[in-house]
Image 1 (cartoon, rainbow, N blue to C red):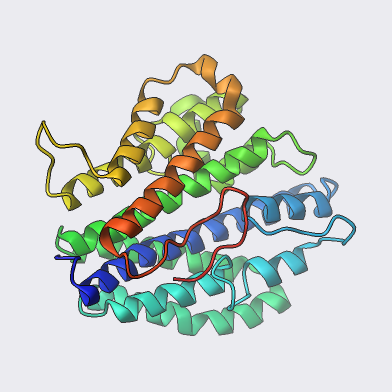
Image 2 (image 1 turned 60 degrees about the horizontal axis):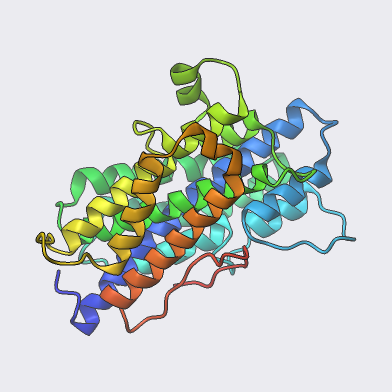
Length: 322
């Protein structure tokens, strides 16, 4: 893909944000589902504190004196079609970006995304009556199907690389946000089992490390496990590979592009991280988020300069739509 051309550059941007928005919807659905089950299993855990934790993870501020309950959380973080930070809004933005890149994404990918979008309204109305389980389950299953179809029906060309790159950077960002809220030691922070569940890592962690939820072991697994696809290290490695291929390979005397430098440095930092450094988890997560933001800006400047970079801000502010 020759991304210097204005129209093709716009397609590259759409594919990048397509990957990010579908991953964002998936991650948000997983987080909401984990918190809902936590409240059902332990109704005395404090709904207000749990809901404030959700807002903190997803970068939405809540006035200190205003009560916060699960109905308001779902309205804002799941059903708000106008906000790309919510599930509905992310899938709407994903569908719009897929429509822009319709000649590049496969028919099966488009049909999956389009049918999901049209089914959301029905599941949204049902969720208000009987609970959001079916709604969140639909989003998780369709996101998995979408990325499975991307991997099985797209050629490994630049189009697929932009989708995979967007997915990987969004995954790094979301995992770092989950750990940052836990590492803050705030009263509303999720416990380690809830964090594993929200990351889709509960079963993989038990198989790899056993049933105990030692804080260092959980943090190490979500950050450093090379075999778990949702770990930060695995996602950074995938992003770095995509960027290397998009750069067309770099000879020994050429300096890599800034996005690849940002991702590669952070990946190398984690590759050789000692367990003792996990005692300084907030500082490490800050580095990861800064590297992710730097890479996103560099990708935008390099491959689609006609549009501005769109990202999570470091201060957890709401993002704009692509």
